[in-house]
Length: 333
Image (cartoon, rainbow, N blue to C red; front, side, top):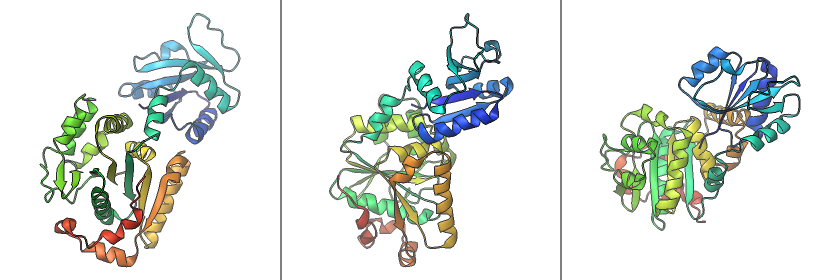
C-alpha cells in the first residue's frame, strides 16, 4: 500500500530539508507533499488522501480538518499548549532522523509488511525490461527473453507499453485485454487470477498479456494496484518467471522496478541515448530511488544488434534466429 505524508509548514526551507531526507532515507514513504497554505492543502484533499499530516503549531486544526487526512501530528517549536487537542506532538528543531523516528512510533508504516513481502519474491523471478531510447528493440528483446525462459519455466510476459507490437499475432482481443484487467485490478477483485487468465494468450509455450486498448489506461495504475497484483501473483499463480515489458515511466512503474529481482535497461550507442540514460539515473538519484539504481543491469545494444532487430516482424516471434541476443541475460535462481 502507498504511504503519503503531508507537511504543512510556512517555513519552506525546513519542509524541503525534511522532504529531502525522507526521499533519501525513507523508501517506504511513497510520496511527500508540501503545503504552505490551507487552500492548496484542501484542494489537494478534494481528490487525494494523506496518511499523516505534519502540521505547524501555528496553524489551527479547524483550518485543515478533512476526511481525507487519516492522522495529524503537530510540529512544535516549543510553544505548543493545545492540551485539549488529542494530537501527537513532535519537536520541530531536531534532526530529520529523530522527527521521522518519533513519527513512526506514533503512526507505524502500514505497508512495512507488504514491502517486506514484495522484497522477498521467493521462487518467483520478476524481471522488468525498460529503455530510455530503444523502445522497439525493448519490446523485441523482452519477448524473446520471455520465450527463452518459457522453454524450461512457467513464464508470463506482460506488455506495459502504450502501444503493443504483438496484439494481432498473439490473438488478443483488442477490446478485452489489459485495459479490462486494470479495471478489475483497481477493484481489488478477489478473483483477480481468474480475470487475468481470461485475457492471457499463448505464443508457443509462453503466456502473454498484451497491451491496453487505449494507451492512457496504463496511467490509471497506482502503486497500490502494483502491490496487490504482485501479491496475488505470488500467492495464487503458478508462474516461475514474469517479464514486464515496460514502455512508460511514472510512480507505479517505479514501484514495479523496486519489486523486481532485476531491471534490465537497454542502452544504445547513440550519444543522445547515452545522455538520456544519464538523465534517467540522475532523476532516480535526485528523487531518492537509489535502491532502483542498484537493480539495474545494463543491456548494451550494439549497432549490429540494432540492425538485426530493426527487421524483426511479428511473424518472427516463432523464430529461433534471435535467441543469442538474450541468452546472456537468462538466469535461473
